[in-house]
Length: 455
Ligand SMILES: Cc1ncc(COP(=O)(O)O)c(C=O)c1O
Image (cartoon, rainbow, N blue to C red; front, side, top):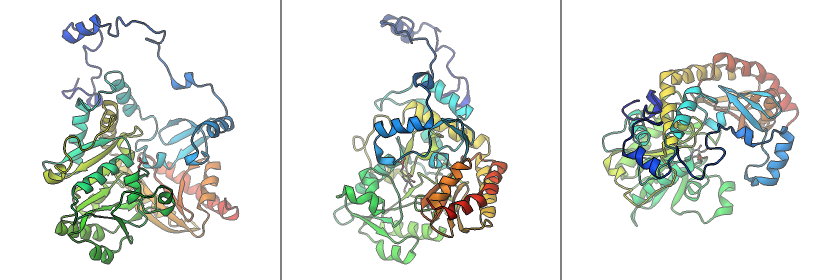
């Protein structure tokens, strides 16, 4: 067992976890009816189980019928019913195989069913699953330390753990409010920005269609034109509490901010004593071939939000606050969560970071990403290719991206259309060149068919 007591470095479960020594804890467990003498016993106490054994098999169509009768319709009709994954491949309920070039929207950094991540999660769950934030656990502390190290955060920096991107952004929003005074109350975000669906994150999100049914949203947020340095210079002064930016706008179609824009934003916010908050929920954790996308511009933010790829498919989000002053803005009792930072989620994230590093996966994201971008640019019908690492957007010569998604599914590829004109790839960072080549080979026919038969 490692000193930190988690399985990332192997040796889990601890040697004395099952029927071992008779320390006071073991004695207490036995006396109170611990797992060796639990009453009442249930038939399942020692039975191994699988979720599929709890669910009768059915064909895709039948699942979709039952879905529409039981699951709230906020996502529309699902495209397929997926039952299994391995690496970059997934299979649907009817047995069809797909190359997953979307990775659960930039989540499955190590693909599906990664053996190391899976075993760390299962062993952590079998050891200690949840404790509440009245307590901490070795994996929580170790993950916070590792994230601070990867982010190059100075002494006094801290991490708050959440369960999703939008919750990480909510925490960042509260941080911005804590930097506010009656004279310093404006929060600046960008047109095209997407930060999540909860009320604070929605206030930062610019898309009217997402916002309008839920107004009034938390106030004080202004949206500036994208990547427009002059507009930023005109807007940032001592009345601004925070500027919130995505280094690459994923949902708007993979639109990168220029490094010079991020650098100017850093200068202006420092001068005005406003917080520079970077939303790296989609771009963080190796997605762009760097641990965090902003590291390409050489700046250090005041705060950064993470989620998506962090848990390798397990839900976990984080807010990193840089330096003691920013970290001191949120104090005991001012924010919280029941699940955030739980042992299983933090073990999943530690395992993901460990496997990304051990497998030189960021280098792979750079190599395969560059290969894809170069060859996509040469495909007929593709007019612009953007992105970094394995977050790639490419524009088509017409508004038939939705039809291309449908045709790609028919041909066995999962991709996505963030705009009517744009296709996005955010595959597992372990995607191989030959898998990428398989998609490049199929793409011309996919686009030709989609253009002829728009969805
Ligand atoms: C940049 C960014 N921020 C926040 C979110 C919200 O994350 P979640 O869907 O986990 O709440 C997203 C989701 O797409 C995102 O791309």
